[in-house]
Length: 224
Image 1 (cartoon, rainbow, N blue to C red):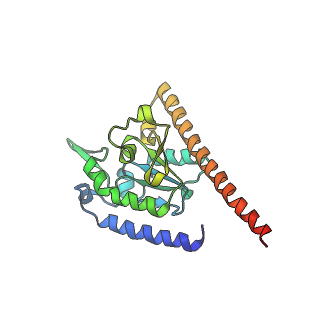
Image 2: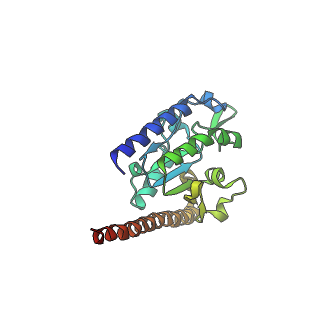
Image 3: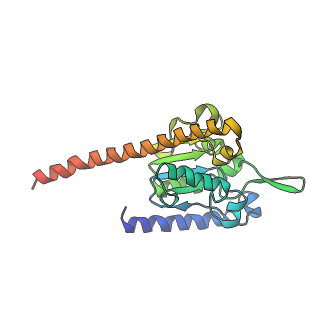
């Protein structure tokens, strides 16, 4: 990707981030500290989409920077993708919370919140133009595939995402961190299988692209 195209996409993302920061369609827009729009390579081949920012993300204005973020970085590194080479965002840009007594807890985004934030994620996908989307957790999966999606039975499969982009679903890092004992070993194995599928899909697309380009270049030699 040339520098001019990279700069163009960065400017478009900055413009959309400003629009998201000004949005107050949902009640959570008034309780957040920061709008957590997204970050990463504007020309990334892989886009990672979570459900929504948590307390740490809200404080810092960055997606996946808490404990789940540390695990996500490790997951990406395991398939040779540094965090800075990926674009990371969430279905909603403000932290969904609920009050329980005197404490405030995170919760999944509700359908209205996801609907109100949908244009921001759709714009991110259109600008970045990822080759693969990895959705983390059931709420993120349902954003793309509808309310009937069941992550236990349907994760690890390829789906057609926006504009036909291959879409893979796996467990959210926060879910992995909540497991213990033998369960965590089993869940980690499933997530690793999903990550390998993403790695292999990206590799296959790269080979396919090279095979498409190569004959054109070869033909041009004989045309001289």
